[in-house]
Image 1 (spheres, rainbow over the protein chains, first blue to last red):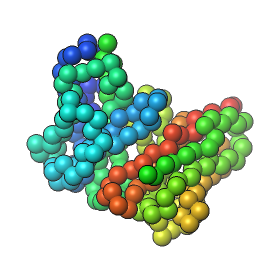
Image 2: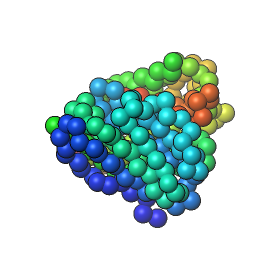
Image 3: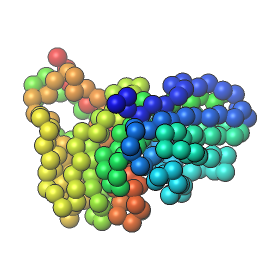
Image 4: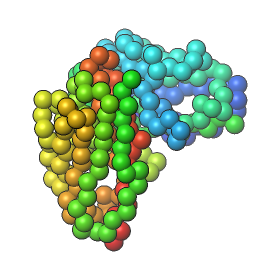
Length: 113
Length: 113
């Protein structure tokens, strides 16, 4: 299996622009997670899906952030408009079942100027 | 609110030494605890997952223990190698929040050859 795939790996954008991060989970995994990692706050869960349905989005920082999972093999995390404080590494992870090991993608390093 | 603390924040040891990384959490109501490894610029790799009913898990040179009542876990690495150099993170899965993982800030390990 190719593992969790994220794109792009690096994104540099200017404040106010829309940013879309993409994730393809491991085939057969029912759970998908979006995390954000910064030096100040460490690794934080933003939102997770079960069978394409958002279950807990309490970690989404603001209405500027939105996430979708239109099918079992694809998810997006969108930031509109982006701000410099959104600069971080965003990880996607997936797992087979509730409480099972989560497998992480390589991350997308986002820089907002 | 669950808080996860990892000590030490950084550790440097000579090759061949046995070492222990510590993780503590404030709320003992957890489903399980995971130890992850993160290499620079990469995603997280799951090392060991300990269910709340278990006391320890072993994989090769790694041994993780869990004492839920005292809110502590340790990761023991035997005969350390330069390839073990990475950041090690522990994460607890909370019982009342479904699949939410709360991460510690990590321990940066450097094994010198």
